[in-house]
Image 1 (cartoon, rainbow, N blue to C red):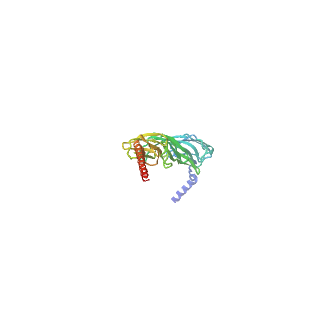
Image 2 (tube, rainbow, N blue to C red; image 1 turned 120 degrees about the vertical axis):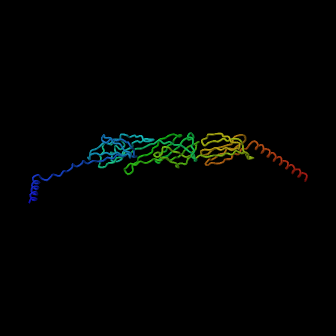
Image 3 (cartoon, rainbow, N blue to C red; image 1 turned 90 degrees about the vertical axis):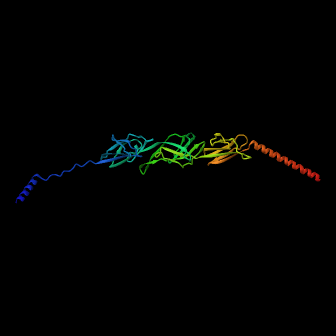
Length: 334
């Protein structure tokens, strides 16, 4: 009976007070997400979204949230020019859902941000590249020997540089592929290096990628020539020299050693003209120096000329005497 009484009292209390109401949490507001990405990835690029600052992280990305609505927003790039190690990055255009009329301006003034909107800021980067030259044995080649070099990029751009000096080259150029921005590394191919008026590399064999290297070493093809100056008739070494004309028309004289030999190293491959100098007569020779080689330079000396003259005179005298004897014999027989 007591249990029934307690139950009745509790039921009456509930009926009088009523059931407790259910507590519903206020629904959280809906948010849209904007992601801004630089191509190529550039840290510390600065933007504002409706005046609020955004800065990209180490991966070149910045994110912001806005209340879900159809309102239009303003996205502005504050750093269209950025300094990067050994170079710079310059804004080219936007890619994504931006207003196409403003694609090439630093500001998007009528940007509608959806649930997940991704905007790409496309930059072109340039880097300073230093370069030098070595021969096939990796020995340095003096910079003052280089007249010019020509390089060609994989986009077809040709660039001729005078001498040896640092140069700023496009490292990454942004392109659109299927509506999305992609950073393409630029590759340059060495076309020519001119030393002494002739090209000393094979076109296209060596390449340079500025985004990966700030210093390049190019291998040039240099040759050695070993000249042997000899007496034309007797083959004896002559202590004299040579006059060498380079492919660019410049001429120089070099003295031979006591053995009549002369070695010249680090000559640019190409066509030369050479003649032995000194007393006597030496014919001008054309030498195509495509590889290291030995070159014999005969000289007709005054001794050779005198010897030939004596030999010729002796031969003529003998012929005359023989002719006279034959005539005498013919007369006696008659």
